[in-house]
Image (tube, rainbow, N blue to C red; front, side, top):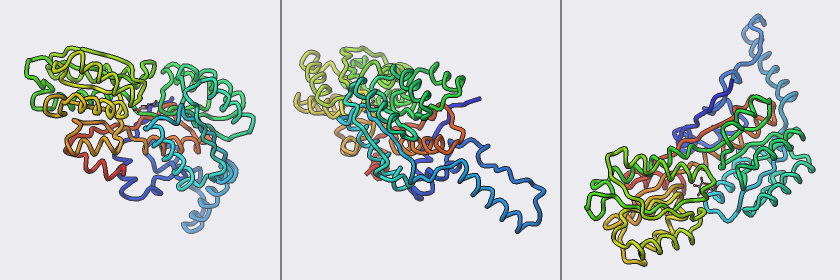
Length: 380
Ligand code: BGC
């Protein structure tokens, strides 16, 4: 039986406040995601006196480690990111590498991080190279979530476990890994939660986002890549949260901006010239596009939090600063620390023959002027 594990943002906070090492990959039993069974060892109770027993347990653990485990400095980790030209995934990949090297003890030269260049064919070649070169484990941010079956099949045939990150494969596929005894898992965040938080940030404003006070909240939706569940859920759930708060809404524009700042700017600029003062709220599926939207809003002579509202997702440093100084209404922290650490921990668990669940979800956190300062301290 496998369950979706929730990795809480609190775990992140305490990791950061106490010490990152305390949440390190070498001791996965300390994280919230470790199955309880892992913490018990098979030391028979009948074994002798107290001091002798302690000694016996240590020895048993050591033996288990050498038989099952692999020295982290010998582990080769193959990583492919869907594209390096993505602000959020850049933060994620830097944290992933840092954690693998500094906290887990993987050698820098044993980590290969490839740029998928937003091209599934290119990424497939990178994965096949990892297979040929005998990598121990892969951490893959798919270009297209729909290519997961091919990737999983080839890795499974080669006996290499895979940790998928950021772009979630279909739920049936996640179940198929369990049913087929396949060493694959997904580490991400539930995009429904981020969408809901965006909608709530608007609904919690005194005027519930109705900037011109005409009784209807008219909005534009700047979407990521609509094939991606993050884009789908954020689009759907943000509006659902707003209507659930009793707000009447009207969609003026919905367009794909592919997570890209320039596209966010263009879409918002066009919408502003077409619909002008009618627009009360600009929803962006991520912060990069929200930064683009802000440029367009300022160029059109509009003022966020006065005559228009603007929300994104990710909590990029620049955006959190804007939330603090009132240039943006809010964002949602997409916890790349928690995601990167869990992905690395699970990769090592696979290598060490430990049980790994099929899905791990890290919580999002709302970012509003009230807590933006605290969030900035965490991420800066
Ligand atoms: C992030 C986006 C990013 C995308 C990449 C999302 O979770 O919010 O900023 O572009 O992942 O897949």
